[in-house]
Amino acid sequence: MPARILVVDDETAITKLISFHLQREGFEVAVCHDGESAYQEISASDFDLVILDLMLPGMSGWDVLRLSRNSGKRFPVILLTARTDEVDKVAGLELGADDYVTKPFSPRELVARVRAHLRRLGERTVDGGGTGPRLAAGALILDEGSRQAAVAGRPLQLTTKEFDLLAHFARHPGRVFTREALLGSVWGYEFAGDTRTVDVHVSRLRQKLDAAAPQADVPEIETVRGVGYRLAVPRRGGPRP
Image (cartoon, rainbow, N blue to C red; front, side, top):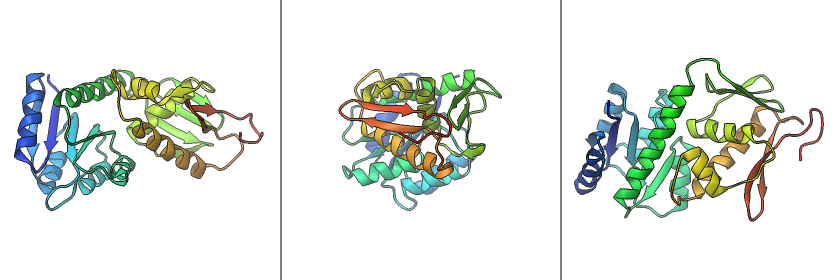
């Protein structure tokens, strides 16, 4: 069964362009041109991925994303925006978006990103479904089957990409990853992407880890200047790095 994708943009030319390229690749596509109808579609139907413009008439793309996440929808979301302001992109990612593409964009690259996210989603579907392998890093516990996380026994609320990123670090504690390597391993990109996406997700993870249990054996995502990031796991009872 082909993946179902919802494309939301108030410009008809944009939705036609994206729909053409997605349908040519075998995807099933639905289109909305405003926020209210988009949220109604999302509430009433099951989509595998949503391409969402931020600047919409009526209900904004931010509101569509926020309400969708609050209602438990966990499909990948790729933001589509004409704005170059970094704050807009960061705000979207912090609300739970997985990625963003800035207009003007390459339809070929957008389709490649769609495929990457759907591939990662398929891998999680195969691996998930109940209790599975557990990853431990100090006070952090990740259950890859149920996709639940906890710090010192307290649940840690993570977005889909935050869980994937933290699990990747936990599988390789102490190993340094470049931003490009993380885009390939966690986002599934086989091409150069915007590494700002990685920085925002790392920042959010740091905030959540610190807030969950500010104690000595909580792992820390360290920045390795000029290279990337690594997960530092302190010894139990020892000082944080």
